[in-house]
Image (tube, rainbow, N blue to C red; front, side):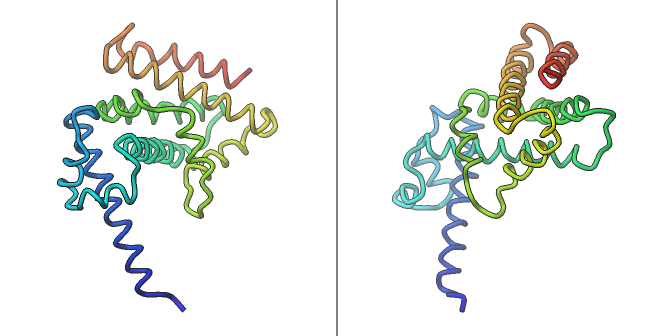
Length: 201
C-alpha cells in the first residue's frame, strides 16, 4: 500500500529542491557565484534559510549539483541528437556529438562560464556512480561505449571520452569567451582533427 502522506512529503521535498536549484542558477548566471548569497537564493525560491541546509551543505554544494545537472542535460541532448542518425564511421558520430555540444554552448555563453570554471572529474564520477533508474547520463554513455567495445576497454573509453570533453571545454572557453587564439568557427576544424586522432588511436 502506498503511503500517501509520504508521497506528498516527497513531492514537497523535490519541489523545494528544484525551486532552490532554479533560483540559484538564475542568480549565478545574473550576478556570478561569488556575488550571490544563500539568503538571496532562499528569498528568490521562497523557502526558509534552514530549509536550504536540509538539502545542501553550502553554496558550493548547490553550485556543484547545478553543474552536474546542466552538464548531464547537455550530454543527454547531444546523445539523443546522434542516436538515431546514420554515420559513415564512428569518428563522424563522435564529431557530430561534440558539434552539438559546441553549438549549444555557443548559444549559452553564461552556462559555459559556469560549467567551465567549476567542473571537475569528481563531479562526473559522482553522477556516473549514482544508482537510480533514470540515470540518463549513465545510460547514454553506456550505449555510446558499447559501440566502441571492439576497440576500447571500458577504462580506455572513459579516459578518451574525458580527454575529449576536457579538450572541447577548454578550447570552447578560450575561443568563444575570449576569441583566443581565434573565433570558434576557425578553431573547429583543428579541434575536430585532434578528436579524430584520439578516436583512431
